Length: 274
Image 1 (cartoon, rainbow, N blue to C red):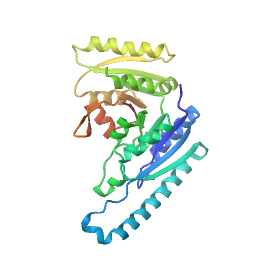
Image 2: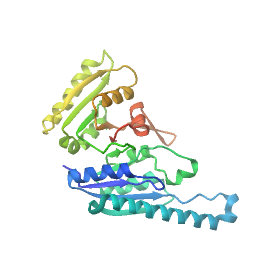
Image 3: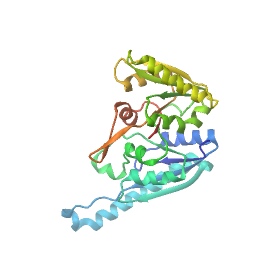
Image 4: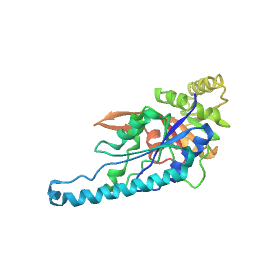
């Protein structure tokens, strides 16, 4: 298995250099091609504003078209012959649903972190947590960094969940191409022996697929998210692979601490599966 088609999600009204750099690096590594996609919602007109609705709608549509054209130029300039297709949508649907639907054409999605923004930017903003949950494809979140995208050292943030098992399977091509793979579980002292057995199992599973991996257990000194971030920093990991786990509450996805931090505050590229 490999990645042959990537989906690069470009946010309108913002630079997308880091997402495009990651897409280009992975496309070259796996001899893949890249589909670019951008989406926006039209402005929402309140009843009190209806008298000016025509002007507002036209101004908003003109702005969206200008931002789409700029994003397309950015995509094609960055990817060149690696660009396979360019898709845009102006829709009343949640943008995460729209982007997730396009994932049917790809093996892997690349996007930027969910950094929020001003209320008037909501029509341009994709809720990345929703995208991860709904896509049915793994998602790489590429934060804004000055260092080039690399995937030589992959850190697998292990937790004995369905989502983590899915993430390791989805990341197998990336792991196979890495020079170093570390499978890390954070555990309390009493749980450490069981954690050691689990990460050894994961490393053995990878080994039987020709992927050499080092199994590690780190004693919890705070939150799991803090410890994973510390290990990634100390070992100069290029990418963190993790399962995205959460549950529905009031029709929103509420995440555990590790997933929340990886979604909202990534310090390096993060590969997430649900």
